[in-house]
Length: 158
Image (tube, rainbow, N blue to C red; front, top):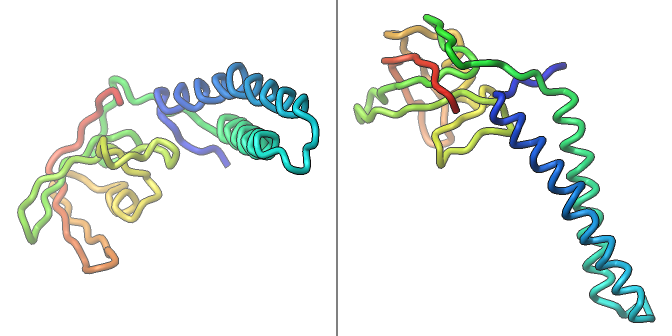
């Protein structure tokens, strides 16, 4: 099943994959060869660390290849919609505190709360999908039920 992702998110995953293949993989292969040259591998901490790093890199490469193969880039530049959809930047007002928040709905691999990017699969993301300006949504958090009003839907480059 295709996984939605923004163009920028796809490019970031592809850049990480390229960096791992072209830079990190050769470095770790070199580190393993150097550690082997030191002799007895049974008590060689550098060799163990390099092999562990190699395992991590190869695992991440495989993971990224799968994610990119399953990705479906959703173009959001110039898009408009009356309802909240993937790629929308949604302004909401929390009803209890009247605090305004803004979230961009993105793919799971792009979610980053530091930049107010939330996954469409997150509880808030799932609650917002399909809503219109003026609609209210309730989101169950671990602590309490939070109610938001959708006040704006826009699309901007992420």
